[in-house]
Length: 124
Image: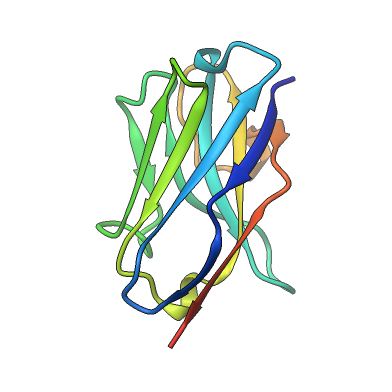
């Protein structure tokens, strides 16, 4: 399996921006479709964004569409999530996930490898 480590979380004011990174190691990064998910205490993990192995196909949750951008650099084995116009309701632990195969998915169950998560807190 591929190992994933997220970074870039933190505290930001509403309207601000953050860029999350996910460094992959252990297997060929380009062989995986990737995704970002988030979770708040007491709630299920929810889909945020996903990309195919090439980055040509991307999906976004309606709640982040137009504000977040997922991208990947296969040469650097890194996945990114650029988050703009952040809102307090974006506060969550953000997880990077890898899905063996080329095609993007929005389903939690389709992803077999997960990072440890990074906290994003958006204040008023």
